[in-house]
Each structure stands twice: as C-alpha cells, then as structure tokens.
Length: 173
Ligand code: FES
Image (cartoon, rainbow, N blue to C red; front, side, top):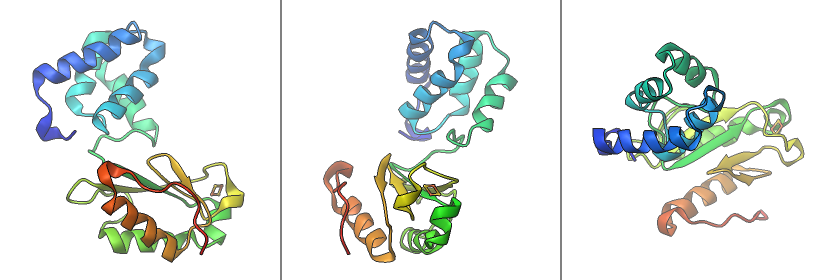
C-alpha cells in the first residue's frame, strides 16, 4: 500500500482498529507503530497524527519513537525488504560486494526504494547469525553465505516468482 492508495476513511478505520487492539495503552506504542508499519510498509504522517489523537499523546513523542528505532520508516518501503548485514563478521566476509551487487542490480543505493516500489535496500549491524555471513534477510527470510552469484539468482527468483514467492532454501554454489 502506498501513499496514493491511502484515503482518510481507510486510514482512520485502520489506525482506530490498531490502537483499539492495544486499548490505547501508552506502553504499547511501539507495538502499535509496528502494526501500522506492517499494514502500510511504512509510517504515514497522517497515521502518526491519528495515533497521537486517539492515544492522547503529544505528536512529538510519537515522532520520537518512530525516528529512534531504525526498523521504523517514515518513507514508503518496497514490497520486498532487503537487509544486508554489515556487522564485523559479515563485513570481513565481503558483505560490501553483496551490497554492490544489490545496488547495481536494483539501481538504487542503501536506504532507497526502487521506482516501481518492489524493493527497498537497507543495512543492519548484526543479525545474530554471524557464522552464516555474509548474511542477508529478504522479507525476514535469512540467506547465508551470500555471494555475487547467489545475490543475482535470488533477485531473479523474486522478480519472476508469483506474488513474491521464491525459494527460501540455501543454495550451493
Ligand atoms: S555480523 Fe552479520 S550476522 Fe553478525
């Protein structure tokens, strides 16, 4: 869902349901924002204003949380979210060549989304599975021991897959 498809009735209804699910508890703010991001694939400004109003919290507080955590985005993300680990273990195993491949194939830089809104590319410091480095997650599926060839193959599978379905098993080179 993109900005263009959001209308006031839908967003009011969607945010109302999410806030209600957590009984508008201020302690549930992060979970509320997580649900909103899952719904829209980012945090629309109008959604944050509605959260502030429905929870009776200052908008600045909502923005504070939304901008503090790297997992939240105020910009629309692609249908497929690619995250390349650049932690030490992955870095020494050439994570940079994996990033270069994604950037070249997708024609975007880290932090950007493709014009067709299909892919977003980001980095993360450590995904907690260092032995599998260089490690990438795509739509929360882990791909270990990434190489240039493997990167291209996975992208091809996602591009040609039906409705984003693709192999999740490890491939041998
Ligand atoms: S450094 Fe990449 S998973 Fe830990």
